[in-house]
Length: 251
Image 1 (cartoon, rainbow, N blue to C red):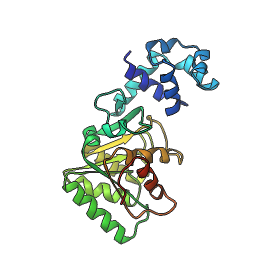
Image 2: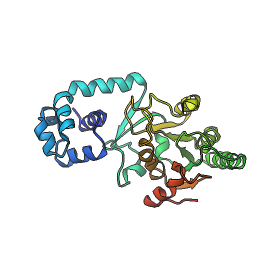
Image 3: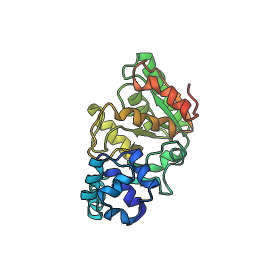
């Protein structure tokens, strides 16, 4: 089995996150010999006892192929950090996702882009400005990236869809879920005309702890950045620091 498939399979295992995969990689276990590892060998690689026992019992080639089939049945494509078409901007960040799940046009993630996020309860003025800027930027050929949230995110996605640049939605659930649920039709439209992107496996529900992880991808993936009318307590309010962390421009 190819190394990229092993990476995908590990990423699909419950309890295996970014740091666990990094430990497994550093221990030299990303080979086909991984299927015969005992719980003790997993523990020596730095994996906890409970997860080590689960890997020893359940992680095998048949399980990986079953998860791959589930992706295909769900219409979800997968790209790993080992693939040539993995987005370049993300590859260069300190903690790039090992695996990305997507529907739509992955090539948009490698085009000139601008990220736009903001409050879920914008003023009428904020909505007008977001719509105007996103529409103009997309018309100029820049891909507008946001998080599919209510408010400014949705306004920017909708305004960008008709332009040459299009739009990318980076979500904090598996691609079989839509959050918020009332954005289901918008998510479908972006899947058809733009790109919906996630680092979470199918079946992952919305959870508050996933949004900060998701939020690091939005500025990290883009060579340019704009921040619109964010409140003080929401994810948009914390984005300027993330932008600074990735040496991106914030306005």
